[in-house]
Length: 417
Image 1 (tube, one colour):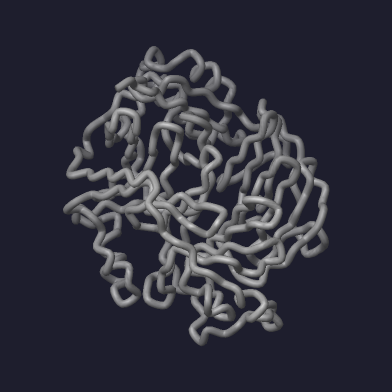
Image 2 (tube, one colour):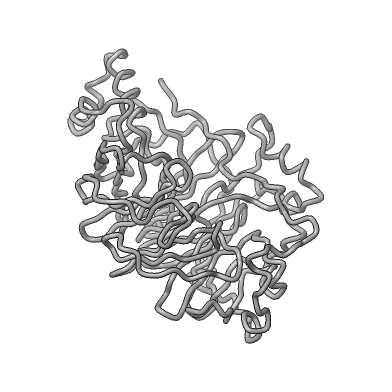
């Protein structure tokens, strides 16, 4: 039986901090009193408060995919030269369009029709008006799309056709952001070097008004005490709710516009939790050893931000170099911890790869075309094509290794209590 390849830890420990805590030139003229003079600390409040304790699990357990997936289908993206994309960092959907962020390869935000045909790039690389060095994150509104460029520390506003509207400079560094309304922004600033604003340096969430004066901070974490992690999607929007999950932490917080955060889910692995002391800078060597792919300990490493659907929590984890997925059905309080074999009859293989969004109970991610092509050829060689669905076969016959990515929609099956 062919197995899905085991994955590396997708969170990088960084060491690029300002050793002398110098202030970047672009922030030299920031009026600290104006930006943080009226700052308040938000509250941490009880939300859904669902505690999920996972005592142990079998890494060799395989979930039969049709038991958990009701339907699966894909949208093949256009192969036009301007449409080609590398790794996808963010997926957003409107009624008729798909917006994708490729932060590193093409450094672009792309707009597609819902059938996968390419429409346009939103903005472009450069130093001129309406241009960015790197699109770090983006927000999709009803009539605007806003791109954050961390290298320029600026937000660039466009209409949904890609026409540039305006640019607004931000007086601090951030990792990602969300706009609640025209005068309420929240920024995820975990491990950002904002030493010029000492009142926000030890907080991971920062709320501002539209002029970027800080109103609230929350999610306290001492920057100079803990290791820095280059992670992604720790703050993200699922089914119109904004969530925050600190790397390697057990709690999933719901983020409000008022500066308060609510603990909705606490996922623990009693006896197998990564000790929090390993996250201290003084224990960096022990942390790297404990999370190494060849490590023989039983620590569970929570590698990615959980996806919160209407009735499920989907959470990738790593244990003993094996990547598995937690799928928790909140309706029946059932937990499935599972690996996947790649010869099961489901439309797209490998399943649950690169999950970036959801709508209701449908999780949304992508696969590269070469994965589809390679899997199809493997099944053909093994005389197992009868195990594949007609949808998968029809798609695979028209996919080449060098084709653009495929956006995959997998609707999770809601089993009755």
